[in-house]
Length: 147
Image 1: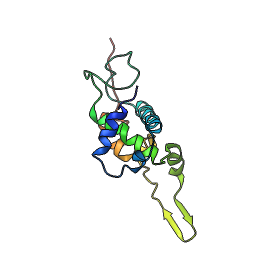
Image 2: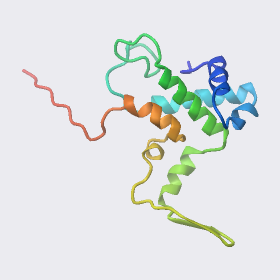
Image 3: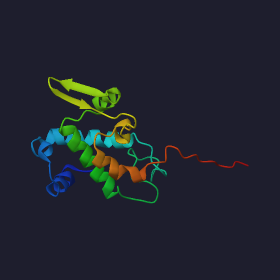
Image 4: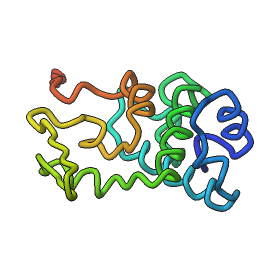
């Protein structure tokens, strides 16, 4: 089950600019991109626990009984990026590239601090901004006392 339905995503994109990749795609590709977006979201490490241990997806969590709107938006944003041709595997592979040239055109990247959304496999920085508040602190340590 995807975090956002095709109808919800269509409605979301009516209120957003630069949605050509979504607008130009067919419903099968849209559904596939939403499924891939859901899978990308489910691979991340979130704070708290699933609402129900038997649920397939990571959300809802804790006392929530519904998927938060920001998770739905993140799924739609990831779907849009995928339809627009962003390949998370290629983006990750390119983290090691510092310079690229074609004829007289040259691009140089500062890779001293790689984008965290690319490291996490999220192809959209907009989606990352929606997801980040739900994530566990990767540098946090949790201690529990056992008697």
